[in-house]
Image (cartoon, rainbow, N blue to C red; front, top):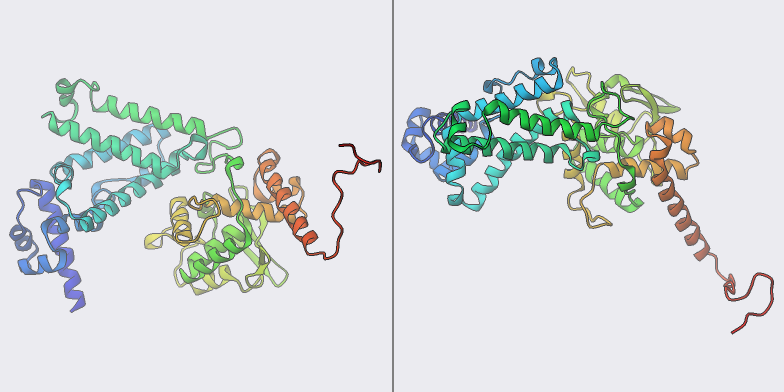
Length: 433
């Protein structure tokens, strides 16, 4: 019975997607959708509540922009030069919007009629499209914090530009290159795409510094002066939340906090990257395969042994054949965007010392500070972390501050110590009023 309901729901979503895309939401009736899906109209209302509820489901379940039927050949784009690949990617996005023009008009024109639940569902659909674009842009551009914008925000802006173009293009009664004569905002579609590509490439030039090789997309030089390390109680609360989220998430957060791996480096990890025996657990990290210890102890608490810990449990529990250490949807290798999403899901609801959302870089900062407190020099930590000595300077200062705090707490635990007379001169002479 459940399988039949699921089958009926999928047929309704597919039918609605076809009709909404070809004739718009306003002119499509629920009876038409039900007839095309081969189900009773009552089933439509039971599943979705209303036509707008069905539209929200289309946005979240029909893979409006991200489905393989939309014509995106990402493997072929990966082989092209960056500027050419970006132009082709944006052209394919606009071509998809052309095919979905009636749906786009309906989403924009009828948005004010949605209920709160429908609006939230629409938002989730837009986030899915944004995430699809963010993964592509991050792979080719790495617009990281050096540019001031994470890939998700860049993708959101690109989405707004493309939807704005589609709306203007559609409302000025033109198509493709021909509509420019009606609005005069750009000479034509290719000029619009060239402008967006130029902007995206300018972000890349800002974010890719001297410390990043051109053939290492996704690995940007971080601004460590903005990193904040986490106190031990918060770290242990995050680890506890990660354990409840499942084996993979627990293992991922363990690697982030126990080895200081950057989010952009996680997709490069494979099962073969974990080397361990009874005396050590080493990860081979980054394009250069640098050796990094995966700590048993994190902020004073032990999380297993070298051979039995959250990572080994995750690897031993898997039945898939993928060589990737961590997986995204459909058993594909995880992306940096998905790493950040899982981190955000785990840390949501945990009180932040700064009242700001937790950033995944805080895990790396915490590991670096802890390694410095354990006695590593800057040069040694530079070799393990992949950060330059200069990038470690802000973290050294944080480690010194953490060490001073620990020393002050130890002094407070020594009873009977006489307070120093700070007014008395160092030479022992009496002070003057």
